[in-house]
Image (tube, rainbow, N blue to C red; front, side):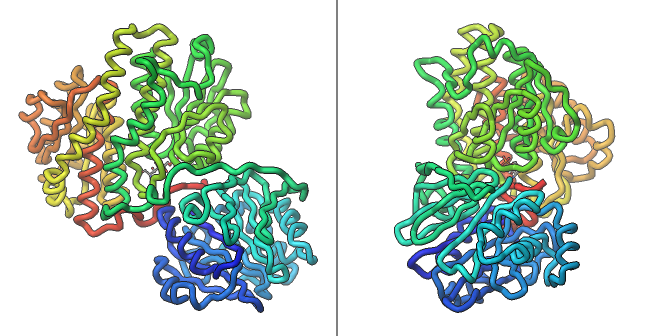
Length: 608
Ligand code: AGP
């Protein structure tokens, strides 16, 4: 989604803004722009397309002098990607400049009101309404105008605002869209996400809903919507700038694929102590765990796919019913949430609008919410009753890999903890599982060593039109992720099917040479899935199988087999997904796709 950067200080703003926008590129965008106060007026530049066009247009920022500025990368929601719709947006006199992330849901009504009062609009965006609304309320006091505008706006917004009359101040405000502020040596900054300002400061303030920040004379002051000053404490970011850079890899996605052994280890290690599972942040006694009779797992995209896996693990180990839901469905379907229900929301960014809404819905109805989140201090992390962080570090590629893997292991640990508390597993079983969990990082490394073979295989499929992923049980959950990885970065049509469901329609799509990837890691289901593989093979499919070492039986049906090391049946996803990630990466690379920033996609989906 859109990215915001703002700077006020002693240095020239434009290069700092460009640098920050660079770091936010991963969020997905289709145009970019900046506005800088040059001592006389607010100058601006906007360009549809990649940031490098804005760089060229402004000679790397040199053409925009001045030490106060705001910058933006836009992911179009209202109005096509174009120079006119790109941010910043202005009031008619160009004395107020605004950049915005989010959606002003009542913008049509506000626009009608403003047009009625003689305001003229030049863009199709909802954001332009904000600039005119601020102008409408502005009588010399920016805070007053901002607070009045906030009372009128519905929806989600993170805004960076400059008032030409107050060139010594940078304003920003948030509601339901992420925004951070930080103080550096030579100035103050705002941004949508940490990587944009990490080069300048490690101490970051996370703005809460309806908080306003005013930066002036090297000071950062926070206010609530009633203009009362509020105190905030900074969070120190532990990870390094280099963690958000490519470190010699061609793409962030490849780098992040390779970071998985460490990410998995970092997520497991603090929670396994002296051979025991310790999840302090769960904040629940064994008795409280036993009082839970139903779990909802709610998330979007890949995070949802980990929840589908977790359902099998929780139900298998802890014998507790788990319902999985896409967050966008959950929030509107009036779910049955009673006492004894636990909602687990899973999110890398911690800002996904639908997941956040699901969390709020549950909390409002008195249900305890546990967040499995990667980004420290994110909205979901702050609003959930308890947070279990995944320690994947910053994930930049739009297609998730390492965050997905850490979500899985966090969920395994949770399920084991529940099983222990509920007495549904023996100590010996827990000990064996812990051994298997500890082996996962090394086993992932082993699979990564075979990437060349998969690259050669992937090269044969760059021209594929359709690819199907099939599996049963946990293998179905892995198929969902394999399929999403492929389609989101290579733009090849792909679908995941529960292998037993093929005969009910999908098999009619199989043609001579169609690639079908079968995931076959669940021993008790081997025979069943192999029969399904044979069914598609006899109809012309080319079969790729991902299976456990030793399952040579699969070779009867498969044309190409990738073996994964032996692990507990509940943990196979963590290994089987690796070859599927590598396969997708190389297919996309072979097709010349923008692997890290696939078209139309955003890293963090902060609008509904
Ligand atoms: C996965 O590769 C996608 N980028 C996407 O499905 C993602 O998992 C989804 O948008 C959820 O994001 P979150 O984990 O930040 O909530």
